Image (cartoon, rainbow, N blue to C red; front, side, top):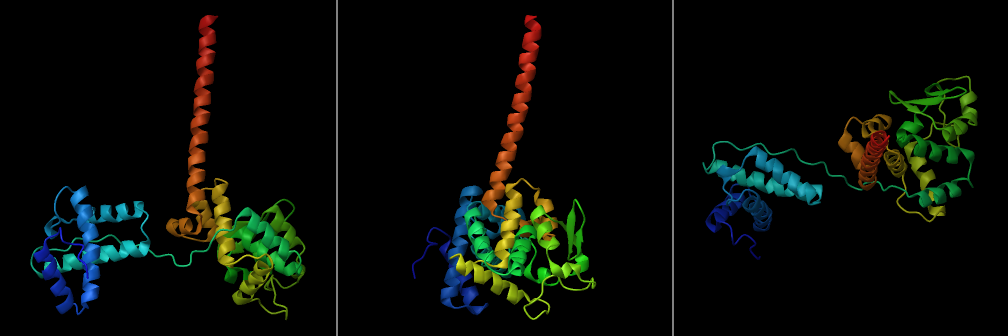
Length: 311
């Protein structure tokens, strides 16, 4: 194996490596991986702290800055967590070797987002719903509801008649103790749904072909069916939910309100669901419009005062 830590304290590295192998019962290859990841921290420490790495000089603030640096560099969450784990092992070794009295607190691990649902483009949405219009009205209503409300598949399956509120001008859904306003398109969907006119308020809005409660698996099968017809891949209910969130962000809706509509308590989870480029783009455009508006106001005032002086 090649060594990437030649510029570091070789003697300290060897002691650390021996400790990993003998005390932590790690293989030589795994120990090398820890040393490799520690080297990234050493190089950052040398540049950003203007000194050589020593366990006694590592603080909670520096560890937090190192994590922020890796996030800014666009490193994957798993990579960031792995590199910090190597630093943690290094500090544990230093504490075991009496080089430091206490181990500084490391920043919390970043949550890794596996198989993040993709956001459908406008053209993909048109293709998907064009295919759905060829099927039963129920299927189109299901997909429209998912896209227009950001519901999860299991929430849609549990939607009952009493959860739907319709009147002349407005409409809303009660979903998992949150209220979701209905668009005009959604009002039309529910107005034409025969199940809403049942006398049983506990009846389900969307039923299976056998008249029973719909299952999340059946919802996903319906979506896959029309995605195949539209020649689209990797389309799920989560994709429609992510598309709903991103469309709101594109229209300048506040991220806190998007989280509320999705039933999420974490803004991080909401941002992970939205397309980050779209959220950033909206923020920049909103800021630009605000600045332009202010410049226009100042310019008008300036010219008005200039005319008064002339008169």
